[in-house]
Image 1 (cartoon, one colour):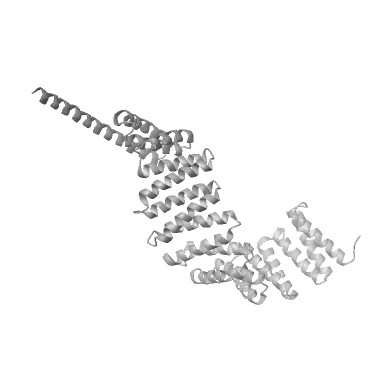
Image 2 (image 1 turned 135 degrees about the vertical axis):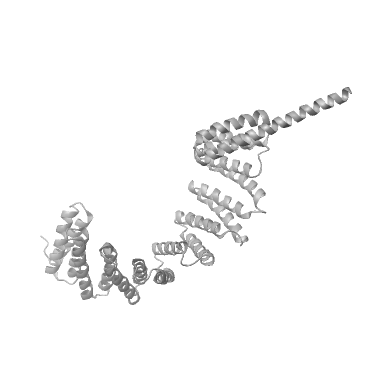
Length: 422
């Protein structure tokens, strides 16, 4: 009988402890949920207060080695991290990392934020990479088999952290690991693959000396977008524009021409042949042929652009002037001075009408026309227009402006050609 009484007493104590732990667990869960809502609303001070209470319950009622204790330390550290209180964040996260019951994604996230602190707060690249590698190892073990895309996204996030800290070589490694996963698993979300390709493009574009690699990833982006979306999409056209920009900066005009022609065809079908965007496609194509000294190919595209821009309205006077000057340069280099002169006058007249005579752009037209007459040895006409441009530049820009100095130099060349040295 005595043994039965003792057994019943022990069972009552055990039941009471379990019930107390259940209550503590529910109380802890409630506090964590409340703090999570505060974090979402960026009410970090309120979140910290709730988390401190949750930590007290986890430590004193659930135990320091409980999963709840480790998770609370992690969330506290994460909240301090969001507040940019890196010293406090590191303290909590390092304690969470030592808790053996913090596992899976919670452990990986803890390591990830410790690495971020090492990178952002301590500026310690080696320590950061050490923790990033540990975090990725946990992510890989947790997700790779069932969710390879999740692991790839985390690799990309790590790479972006390193990229933003300008550790390009280490970032490149993780970007490529992320991309490799997408190339091995064709059924993964193409939007996430696009994000990683964009990251690799950004990396090589930022490095400048690796622009060829940047072009390779732009080509991959274009292929991905064409396959899963459309050549008419904004993302595809952004890749086209960026490819043209890089090729022009490298003077690779022949290589740019097929892309320029594709852009012109797309704009013709989507924007229409009267649109200013289509005129830009024509102008750029003409410019590429001009740079290749293929004037016969360049001129029709320039003329098509000029015709559109002439009709586009006064707000596009700068676009019109750009193309007009491109054609004038082309004419001048072929010694077609009469054609150049006619277009100079047309541009000068249009600028006067839209901008007025007391404007730097009108002065530019005067100066350019004067220099054309100087080439033709028509000194009297040259003096009239160069002087007009000089006077306007003096009043509008001032004598310290480089354009005013250019006018003075052109006037000096005129006098020199006339033998007037004094």
